[in-house]
Amino acid sequence: MKGIFICIIGIDGSGKSTLATSFINEMRSKGNGFNYVWSGCKHYISFPIVFLGKKLFFRGIDRTNDYYQFQEQIHKTAKIGAISKIYHKFVLLDYFSQIFLKIQIPLIIDKDNIISDRYVYDVFINLAINLGYDLNLTKNYLKSFLYICPKPDLVFLIDIPEEVAFHRKSDIPSIDYLNVRRDYYLSIAKEYGMVILDGTKDKDELTEFIIKIVENNFGSI
Image 1 (spheres, rainbow, N blue to C red):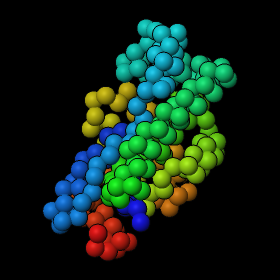
Image 2 (cartoon, one colour):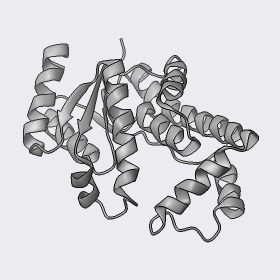
Image 3 (spheres, rainbow, N blue to C red):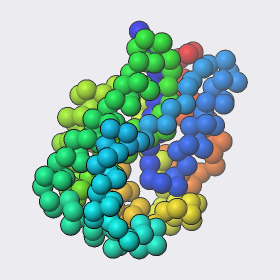
Image 4 (cartoon, one colour):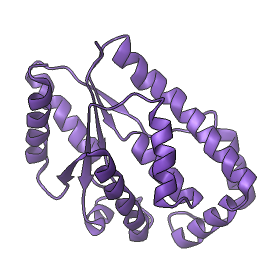
């Protein structure tokens, strides 16, 4: 018997962290324990590749102030097949080791209940867009990687208009950055039968809705 594993995903500025924290607080007030895990990808094993790439290909380019030039340079670099493949493999190796420690072990050995802020879906969407993968190729890679990863019991996608998300966070480089990602999220959500939340709704309303779905699926935790 493993713990319950729930994910909240979505574009930057959709409110993932806020909603995950709200859910945990409400569940704990009911005596039901959930642990928060941030499951984005940090660069450890892949750090030398990322560092070298920035020095060689992105010197003098500011991602925040000149996103279009930055994205164009990413796509040019990704066309160099050897670099693209090395980066892809190192990032996934990095990420698998992180989720093994942060999610797999606590779920199976400690039997923790986990709510994850971001997960494999977010990481693959970012990786795909950076490396110029189309949606079908992204789905194929994602499907393969999910075979070796912990399977979420529930996944919630917070869907929100790009303009709203853009004005929520000061570090989003462009609305176009959100546009393409939102399309990928919605298509993948449909593919995997995720629960889609209206991110423009009040946090407390969304929290209550998630709790009802969790209780309907798992009863008293």
